[in-house]
Length: 86
Image (cartoon, rainbow, N blue to C red; front, side):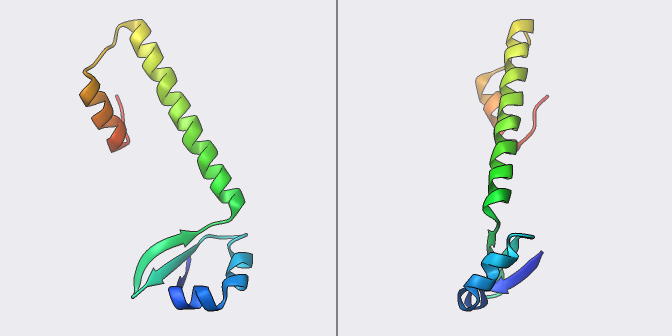
């Protein structure tokens, strides 16, 4: 992934908007990553993927309830926040 300083991103904003249509660009401030600029199309793809993952998780939870595979609510949310499940 290409990277720009915050000052470069500001100075070359129009060019950066063109470049992010083909690949994300990391923005660094004081040498540290602070943001990633992506195209609107890439953002929509990420949002759609997040929705599909949430729907899959909900479907699995429904199947688990139907099958009687129940667990404590706190551990369920702990696993959800950690990004994994059984």
